[in-house]
Length: 598
Ligand code: GDP
Ligand code: MG
Image (cartoon, protein in one colour):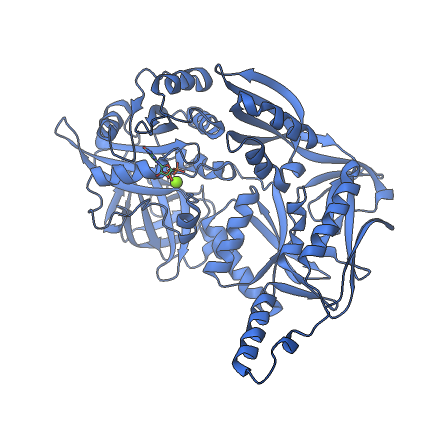
């Protein structure tokens, strides 16, 4: 199609402001889905996304829109996730668009991710159409929302479009605005092919599927393509677009977005951000690609059953293709055996990877407590980076420890400021800025150790603000801090997978809280189990799990065999997510107990 009639756009918003609902309405209005196919939030295709009500992967969908000027336009919609952990995905989608709809909930106003995503879009040079959503709600305040968009984001909101994505009111105006206010893609369809890979995933039936934006030239079915990063060549076997149903086509030209399947066997060959070109007429240069993303949160992942170790490695490789923002490498633990050290963008990201591994690959896993990466200067002036507590150096050889710091932006209502200030100070925060952005809304800027954020900061922020505070953060430097390694001993034996790194001043409190939580979480055994927290040789806290008194079977009097069997099966079920360490069965929750005692 002539690129004059193509519009590529993303929808960006704070979480729950209505991106997915708006996508549904746009699909419906353009007839991309029949009423029967329509189900709420069709773009959130993964089960997990639907259950959690969040969008994890960005999706690209083509719609055909007959505009009021009589011309039919091709609109490519890219739905993006709103959570702070996934801003990397947002950035990737934005690189494939010329414009964005910035959706703001008229009853909530501008929130932290509204701001963060709007800035990302502005930095990518995108044309932005502000959309004020949920105007059907009695608490909607359109003038105030406009004012906040202008004051906090700094965009002209005089032509923001008021809509209700729920009832569909005003949504047709968005389609007209996309056509008339957003620019068409630039790019030369006759130039040598340059296509940007912005997503790829593994499909059990079709193999590696690649989602790409054609920047210059044409991609044709049957063509021999070359990946510019590694020079490998493949034949394009089939290609198509998502409408959102996959529809096969024979060609994609400059400005268009679609998927292709080539003779790619190895999942590792398709790198997100790589440029695809034609083998017999290659482009001279690769496209700029994407910044390499740095993991912020690290944890060990192990299989409960050690025979499943290779299955876990295969699963991680496949998931990584679909999500280039996490990393993994082999590690081993005395307590847990062979596993992988994994790096994530944040806690939610870590939870999602773990859940996908368990559901999509049917693995039973043990995850260790999340932590961050420290920079340690040794007394011999060498510098090492440590993200695994089991590799923590001997304190006598350490000169200085630096921990990663984030700058957090918190937007909230005036009445919650007191509670939030106390929370951030408890978490070692340092205030950078305090600003009223409207009569009752406050924007707080703080520097905080990432180590404190990965514990339970998000949940505590939600609870002190009753949900009326939003958070966005980015890495912003390092602080020199007196961090120490705290070991946990079970029956007198240190369990390496339970060790954590804490600030020296917090060690006693956290140690006490941790062993007391573990005492609740570790089930009684046939014998007494001591749980201790120690720093070096010094024990700082101790609790005891008392021995089991009654044999469980003894409860089943008489010959009720089926009941007995049920009980045993239930016990077995309960054991599934436990790891036997020495003679003690430790459940998964105990490995993550530190998350519950922040
Ligand atoms: P997302 O996180 O930005 O994708 O938000 P969703 O589309 O999942 O919407 C979050 C919640 O807001 C859902 O419960 C929607 O039903 C609701 N919602 C979305 N748009 C509207 C609207 O225009 N009016 C009302 N009343 N609710 C809406
Ligand atoms: Mg959504």
